[in-house]
Image (tube, each protein chain N blue to C red):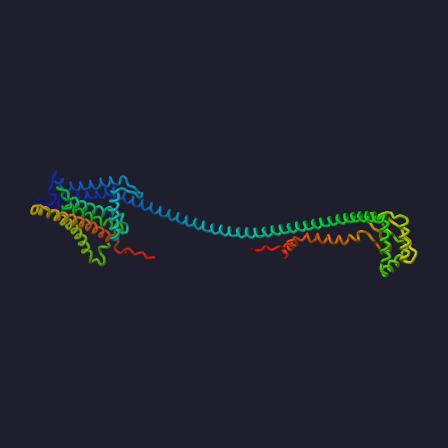
Length: 231
Length: 273
């Protein structure tokens, strides 16, 4: 029994190999990119618009709103990173309804890669926002004694991100596989539905945590949005 | 081993590529479209607001003009009413004046008619009386009317009361000019002598007399001296007739007189069976 789509190897040449994870990822990338291109090549800017454009506008503006709610003042700057995390993880979970498909997020390699991306992106955004000194200074806040703890926190949360997503996706697939062998009728459908739900929740959690980390790195001491005085 | 490091690298690269692709094909176009639509809506709202403001302004203008027009109309109406009243009053006055003038003219014409009729009647009556009297006197006595007229004149002279006779006598005596006896015709010599004699007898003095003919007298004889006059003519008798005719005409000129006469008692009453 395969624990992850990494084990599904299509082609290998020494260290380099093309496995199920990479292939399914490419498929998802293809779906996302081509789907987006198909819809956005004929965008209308007036009040009438196509259904697919409407759907994508809802998704994009929803993600933008969520990023803004986390506390990032310029959501359009971060939507490329955070939104892609969400869409990729969410689509990877949604596609589990397709027979023979295995979510690439069910591979610890994928989740680790995503977590590493977050690990790299957070300092980059932080440095971009408040400069290298300002960002590095955040590691010795409130005292220099906190430096190792901050570094450990940074690493551990990356690990947590990777393992959380992997665990959830993998377990969903595993439970489905196991249930199919025990009770092949009806019950796996509920579990599959539950898997879809947990997949969406995980996508939301992963992207929101990434946004929170970025927000923490970019506005260390800036207060949360001041509510505008009501007239 | 759960982690395949080549796969991790490949997935990270894949993810970065996916971020780029979605940025290129999804987020930017969609966000651009949304921004453009928001801009469009904001623009349309602003235009709508501007139009609304303009419409409000125009409505205010219209209402203000309406009020002005109403006021002007009311002013014009009241002015026209006043003018019309004044014009009416003026026309009425003019009509009244014209009616009065017409009435006065008619009255005058009526009076003139009456006067002409009077004159004609008088002349006619005088002529008739003269003719009748001449005829009657000629038929009866066989003497001429002039002779009888002289007789009447002399009778009158004698019949004068004493006071009048004295006054006339004083005048005749005091006059430097001779007394004038006018008659409508030339008197014959014997009648002249009779008149001379009668005058002298009446005034008991020598009287110088000059005889004149005055055709306008029509008929009659008069004695004039220093402002005093003794006359007999048919005019004397006609004066009363003239007066009566004049009164009759006046009565005719009064339109109410006839109506008043019509309502007098004595009319035959209708009796019910």
